[in-house]
Length: 250
Image (tube, rainbow, N blue to C red; front, top):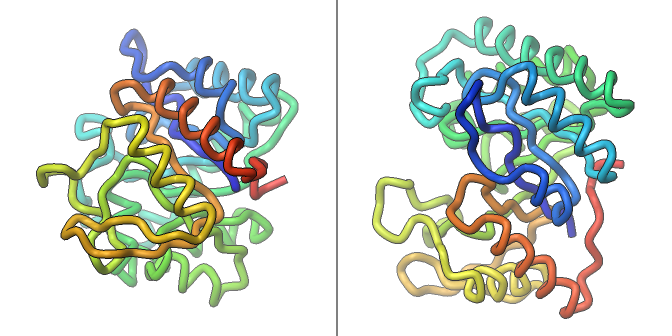
């Protein structure tokens, strides 16, 4: 099982999350590429830290939405979205290479992640960017999404993801953040859910029903309060359950 987290989500003098601590827990780092968060100095520092820690670097691409932290839908033209994603991939690749590594996978962020679950044109635009940049890069996303379906059709390696600290609908989609209970905060509950997901057991959806997920990677959000403690609790619980932790992208 891979354990990923969103890193590098500060900007200038503003800091968000404890990147250094999380790099000691996770196996894959989704690094912000400057469009929803992150700046050149932060990208360089996180890439260097990830490389030193043996953590795989992934590009966390997003809408151009610094003010909204990438959590607002943007009705961008497909060609423009493809160019935006290519720009972000190239920017992060530069810092990854300087650090002695490279970008090894792609994960959309926030509203873009949610939109391309069903928005066919935008999903195709992001797939096109990955294919044009490097078709060997795996892509991370929600099972059943248009994004993963189109990526698979294009010959890309798709990786199913689940979220440690987010509530699910009965359909297996994420409960919108604006809804009560959308984000979980109890470390013990989160850890138990992750062990269940990793071992093929069902979890409870937001309506109390049974939902079975089969992720290859589990995400712990770096900006969730107590993120480091949650990530450590999840890693310890998975290890105790006999789940081997390793990045999906070598």
